[in-house]
Image 1 (spheres, rainbow, N blue to C red):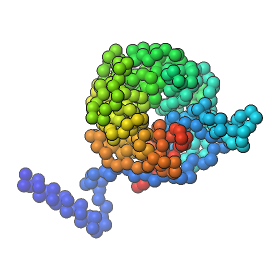
Image 2 (cartoon, rainbow, N blue to C red):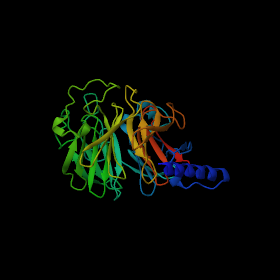
Image 3 (cartoon, rainbow, N blue to C red):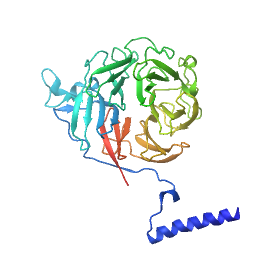
Image 4 (cartoon, helix red, strand yellow):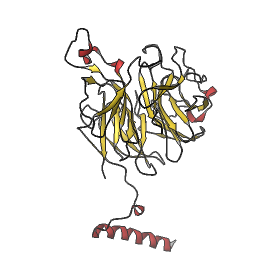
Length: 381
């Protein structure tokens, strides 16, 4: 023990001496600091064709670092799209396409999609993912008695240019049903495991579960609820109100996100429950993290993205109600930092719905009303 203490003191003195004389300290001798970001206020550029964004319900950076954006043009109010009225009310604006692809300079590379674009196009586009082949997965969250119809109980797979390839589920006004795997329930987000040819769906805004399907055939494979309970044990008919001092036995919902880490664990956002639950790919519960669990109303765990380092040591969690991004240690859920503030200026947030990371570690956020926008945050070296 005495020799171990001497060795540790010597290591500490070496690190301190290197700092004094200006010799770089190798990364193995110090704990990795959480990532820091600076907003790029000039990204993206103004959209062409008199377009205006609506609620941005999905964002994804592909292998070429193009940033895909999914918006919900049907949600725009008449005074936002005055140029689209008959007769026009104003010189601006018209709804943008549902899918917009932005380059690193913030200009539009291509776009496609709109309400009625193809069979069973979602009533309220929600959730976006690109698989390894460049296919585009889109869901929708129009569910419930006050939602636009038909209700969104499906996820669609498109080619990179918008050709429909596969549909999982179908639109219907049937009530919540966590046991029925032929339809979904307002899917919040999806993630494709390319090696296994499986798609994981956070399902969602009506249902309260995670479901997994074959990403080629659409065949159902497995699913689970909070703490890994089987689908037939999910019961959301009598959910208690959120209690910051307790852990609900069911997902309070919406089940807003699902992501797979580099070490093969599945991270699921229980938004109103202010928590992230972690599972194996087979649905075995591993642990849960609470993120600012004092947050009420719409909750904190709106979405997450893994940090850019090879081991993905941190989670960047969208605190939608708080208007911040929480930086959370992935191993134990402790808070390592946060950035942003609730507001409408550059670098501020209001209802961050989704986030993404490009190959350079730059971080992208997608917001719904009232901001209706995307932002880029540059990783600080």
